[in-house]
Image 1 (cartoon, rainbow over the protein chains, first blue to last red):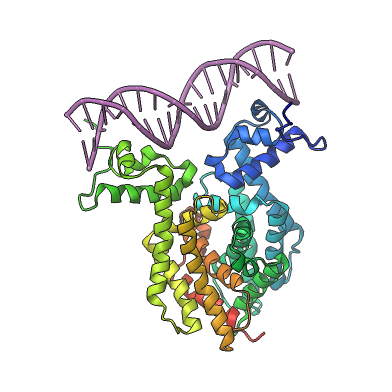
Image 2 (spheres, rainbow over the protein chains, first blue to last red):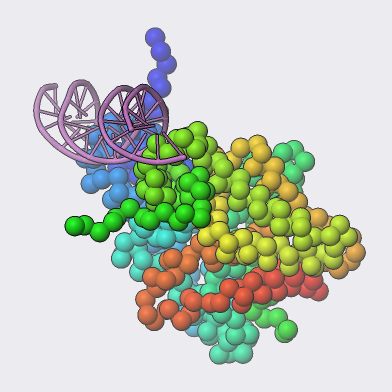
Length: 211
Length: 211
DNA sequence: GTCTATAAATAGATAGAC
DNA sequence: GTCTATCTATTTATAGAC
């Protein structure tokens, strides 16, 4: 008789949680439009009808994945930032937290990139507010650093782009880089810690440079 | 009687060209899976059957848009780079060319971001070779700069990420930034020239910094 | 909570007339 | 070159049994 094709359920995680995880992976790999609810249910080891038992629709499921993602970053950022924190530490923390979340949730970078490309079409008010809080983190850090004469007056958006851009690209290109030809393989495979340290160094170099 | 809904054709551009342009915009806004051939045809002012007269399929049309995009960058890069070019100039040129192409083809940044998120699922061998040539540009610049003791030995991939990441993010977030709340509007609206200059400065600062 | 069966809509692709 | 009409497959979503 044929071998079991459908993925084995892990009894530890409830059905809802398994559906959520499977959905995050599917949305990351194929985007909202390309995602398929049958495939999500199958990956979670249940029937498609179960997806509609636990969630209202494909769209609301996607919305939950999206909010959870940004909420996790905002929460961790809030937990690791004291009110009077050192501006340079604030910058370092942002880099570290985004990297940690990207490692903890591999679906995070691709989904974020896709959402940017789509002009935030699926971002509801709640989620947008959470994103705003993350942006606020950089803006405050730059502003306070400038006030304390520790930073040059660089446009905060440029600092944000210089941090989030390289990080998202690094994590999201991981599958692509694994497919690099042998000649490029070495040049394209960097340890995460080195990338984190580099992005931190560059951000602070930009803010603290004399010229 | 109702006003003409279907977009007026511009007689200057041939049907094939109008379809191509409409497709690029549709793919940028909705991705490959989310794109709709009826909508593409309608935006081009023709019937869907015309799309299949001029192109084999939705997939091959997307493939052409993708290749054209990277080919344009590679061509312009080749045209503007002399064999023994100054390493710092090579870096500046890369930044400038990507920015120019992003302005000339607004569909370029979102499609590139989406393709990264998708792990290059739609990138064929030809297109991949063109992308390789673009990457090669940075790698050569860094290598020669280091050899001439003008640059520190920074990982070329990190330089690439530091250039392309912020640029793509800046251009692709344009629609998102236009939707920013009034309080953030000023902070989030930067002139392109300032962004280009900043990315160039940061890249060279990273490569030339003493520490 | 979980499944089978199916409704209903969407969308890629083509045949054939003009 | 261009259009109308249509075929066909896919896919979101639900009704109803267990």
